[in-house]
Length: 534
Image 1: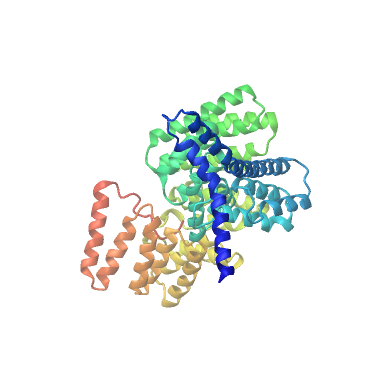
Image 2 (image 1 turned 30 degrees about the vertical axis):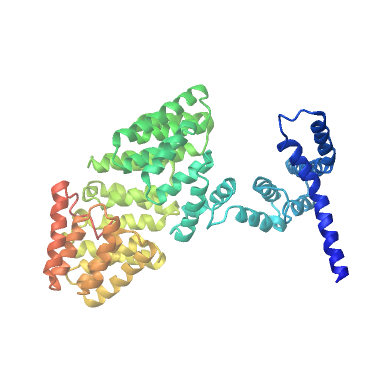
């Protein structure tokens, strides 16, 4: 018991002696009487000051230790950051630096870790690629806020998903998250990815804002901006955007006529503005000066623009053919040429130049790689002046076309335009049998598999299902067709008729009302648009 009392007494005395300097310090500075100026009071205060010396020493030790620790951390950070920014560091050196930066309780912040990840990525080494990616993923998680530059890096790295079809929805959401977390950053690569993301997700207003900023420093984005404005129906603003692009590149062309890039962009802008002859003349000049292979391609594209405009205006068929012929002369391997040729051959007015077209197709078949496209164009030409009106196609026209389309599908089973047209022709003949309908269904189904977003292919499949009285399946195909159809009225009429045939008069009436509403607000367009020969 005596020992315990001694221990308690010792600890109490130790605590009292340890606290006494702090008490003296407090008494000297905070409890002094300002009226006490006698020698005795001054002596007492001096004694308090002397007895508080250990408290002063302790305070200085604590403050000094904290300052030394902070200076050590700061100097360590500066030293390692300087080493990271040095060039010619080997993989081993970077790994050793990284071990210190990534250690638990290290003084390095997100900026240092991100710089380490960037330097590791610059090595292009498979040994450290996973470590670099792991650091960035820790700094920019997909479910929490992180370091904005790391989110930017992940957004740029995953931007390639926007060019794939179909776009993966989960990856698209992750990209949107990283773009949102890096919204405080503004640089050209990030703005480009943002604009593409907004376009892919249908956020045209946000895309317009990003493209407007991009176009101020990179005039090539005036073209993308004009497309957004066209989609919004603002034709005047779209033309203004193209005019701005033309002005910028015209100035660059005048400064250096032999520079191919601005000349091509200037001609592209002029072509989209409808100044086809100026665009062609500029690119012909560029071809003479530089022999850049992009000029023949560009000239071909402008001639095809002229063809498309004349086709839309229902211009003379010989002028349409002249533009295609010029396009062939400049770039005979362009896929777009053969699509245009097929469109021209499907026009009933092309019968006036049928012999010329056949001769050109024969010539191209002998030395072209686009054999299925040329054979397909000839099949359209074989249908004659009847065009796509099935009621006026005679067996003498349809049978040779079917034989040629069958030949195409046998040699090129994935050439979907031929599959679609063959299916439509087979089922549209008055003498078509159930076996013909079944075969046509297989062709149409394959065409839809190859190009699922085509409204005309869906219409063809719906027509075949209607012929087979598979009304519910036909309606489903027509509904999908409506999503991308530029002229929905013929498809809506077919849906209304299908509902009428299965006794759903109320639903048929609803679709008829939709037709009436569309017709009341705009012209119905080409009544022949929909399933059939293309």
